[in-house]
Image (cartoon, rainbow, N blue to C red; front, side, top):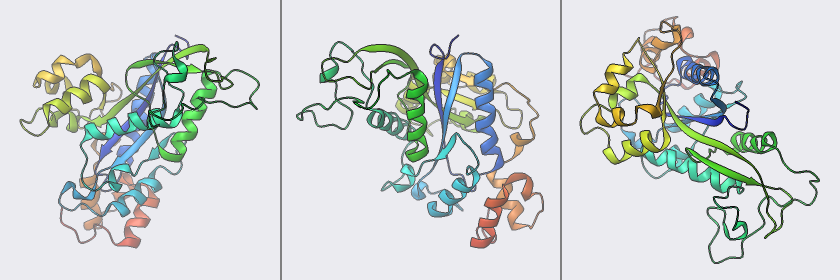
Length: 307
């Protein structure tokens, strides 16, 4: 498969990140490596989205601290970014609403997605008032040549580095010429892009707990978007999926990372990290990056907290 025929993916991980661990970062890396090895995907970005303070989990420290720790954890990554949108809302957001937010945000930021190239001038950028005169899409008289897939993905990368946005799920979109004026837009190539929820097998297992998840949300998360699962503690993901009718229904939208089942990071968790900090356990350096440890100690987080 060529680059333009492969599905381009952005991985989104939602969670407490209380604190963010080396295991979280390795989850991104393992997922990207696995998807690349299938030969069907190109991962072009990753997003860490910490949960809102009102989530109500015991021992959850302020999002102000969690955002800073997440930023410290990914500061050396050239493809993983932290997005504060969840934390900045008035209240807790569902995972489904977070996925939909990023999908719509990417549409609004790129401004070059057309579902029907025969009517380009009447296709508004999301967020643009319908009654206003449509503006040229990616019009730039200083660019002499037609854009390529690499240039478009470069724009996506630039957007990711600024605000961590993603494209809509499981659809094929037509990009338009940067020099195009209204009414003269020309089609030059299509690239399929998806946003996939990245999670551990523990989140997947939570889908099987009656009443915990809204079934309509599960249909959207698994059916419309899709999931990449990185197993933890040698979890039996097949057994987990067989316990949920929705997971069975959309099993083809669930990709389980099949690498080293004994990967050292598969047993790392935020809970173990907090306990290690409380007990002065030197193994905390195996769980958390040094900048995160330094920030925790400086801010006196978790040291006297329970759980």
